[in-house]
Amino acid sequence: VQLVESGGGLVQPGGSLRLSCAASGFTFSDYRMRWFRQAPGKERELVAVITSTGDNTNYADSVKGRFTISRDNAKNTVYLQMNSLKPEDTAVYYCNAQAWGKGNYWGQGTQVSVSS
Image (cartoon, helix red, strand yellow):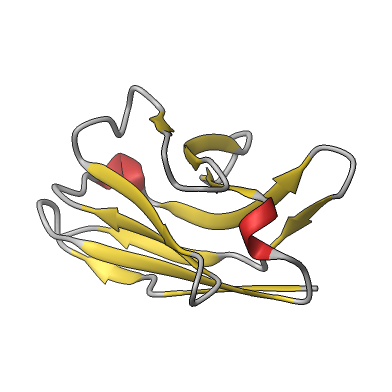
């Protein structure tokens, strides 16, 4: 099982980034996918979630209206489009795949830094 995040980097406030998470080793379309983030000295927090079919999404209040989660089950990939980035969005972003009774998998994380 592998979840490989990419797309992180350094961006100025107000900028955009698109994170990707490529999955392999399990039936991607059976799993809901989530993005978490963890800032230095803080607990890991849930940012966004998408159901296995992509029909439903949910977001943390802090990112609602700025971030969009999506998935392509044909490509076994989940995305996080991040717009209007703020310094407080700086964190390591983690991809998670979860399905009740099947598994709970994590990627290695990708750093997002928002600074001028």
